[in-house]
Length: 95
Ligand code: FES
Image (cartoon, rainbow, N blue to C red; front, top):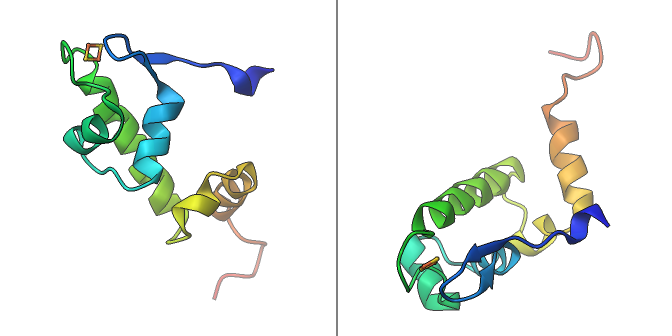
């Protein structure tokens, strides 16, 4: 299944990308907080830039959710809602 692809983000600690995202969704907001939560980035440090990118993606995802709780944003349904919000409204509907 396409959604089951797992990407090894941190080779030193054998941490996958989805595990880093889970740490961020549980509250980690910096590379150091992610490292503390799951050990990613605590070895050679070469993955810390990638962790920063994932942090940025997750922050963008939270903004798109307009304050919905992080737990809800993990559901695929809310990806669809976020995309729908970006579409222009029906013709003549703007104030
Ligand atoms: S690959 Fe993550 S610390 Fe080395």
